[in-house]
Length: 185
Length: 357
Image (cartoon, rainbow over all chains, first blue to last red; front, side, top):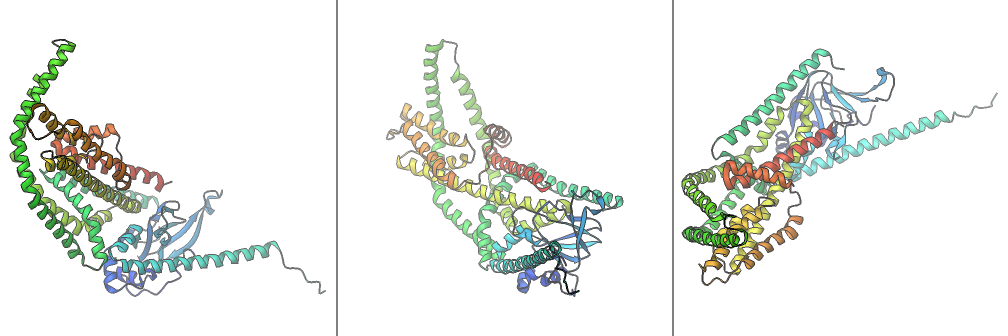
């Protein structure tokens, strides 16, 4: 499992409409019905064809996307790899109710660390930094609830990543120092 | 990797959407420039929108419904403007009428001053060296005739602007975000994040720019009014309003703002039109100089931090173009329009460099 991209909060989706997607998203979990309606008027609905890029690695990111319908594949490009077949490393596949790119909501001029491409006809809901600023100005209570949940999501992603790094370090150490051979015989 | 067919389809959609967005924007711009008084009303409505938007957001943040949050500052501004107009308008009318009555006298005095200067110059440089008064007389006659000819249409135009501006400003505050979202929804996917970020940046900077310029003009106007009132100079209010408005024009605005007062001071001392006035050129220039000093030392560094700097040559060109189309008003509103254009182009350029880096 890739901790940075997998939706660790994935839940089964009941309806494929925008309000449900927003309601199910951990970022907006604490919002009241009225606040959700307000949010619905702020977010942006975008439609993508199969094979169309949502964003590309290295571009400036402004916010996050939530999947309403369809499928999005996340992969990393490594242009320095000689063999063309191995230049794109598949990371994960995201479907209904999943979300990605939320790090850009807090980081000014952050670069996308991976590319996201729609794998079928896909409908996404975009929530961007200017939208978050607008909510914080116009409805500070709702804004604070979102920021608090966003911090939680980012903290959890960080924790998962740290665990993964520790695991990898441990494996690397084990590979470098093979366990001592017993002289029982 | 996208197939060739998909690439073609995406490219076609990209151009279609981009053409639609640009088409809507171009049609809107053409309409605004084409229909009489609409440009002026739009610029003023934009200014009102940017001045009231922070108050509306704050009220909405405090739990007031948006409709009411817009109505409250509008009513407040209306009441303030009403009180201000009822208090100041009689003074402005009286001063303008008095000034109007004095203009022929000032004209004569100015001509006399010019003739004396001309004579002095002719004794110094030779009899055929300068023919200032002849040309100036023709010019002044032309301008005053023009003014009296355009005054009725200017007044009716002002009334249209006066009615249209609050209506447009209310509409911008109420539905501006919805319209922007509508336009943004037409932007192609590959440009969407860039567009939303760019819109946010421009909106933010324009708001800061307009609020800063408004506060700056108001402070300069107040200082000029106080200064002129203290020294007992006539038409203090009218001259202060003129100075505040022309202060919106960078570099040469403050000079234009001081010209009427300097002329009045010049002809008054020469011809003793106002006998109790012992004002002279030095005192008047000092008032305007102090106002500019306060502006440069205190206001600009603290208030006008986000100001868009235009090159002096650009300012001059823009002002000439503005004056050509709309006279003094054109000179004033051409600067915010040029600043907005510069801001948009700069942001777009930097963004394109940065976005795809």
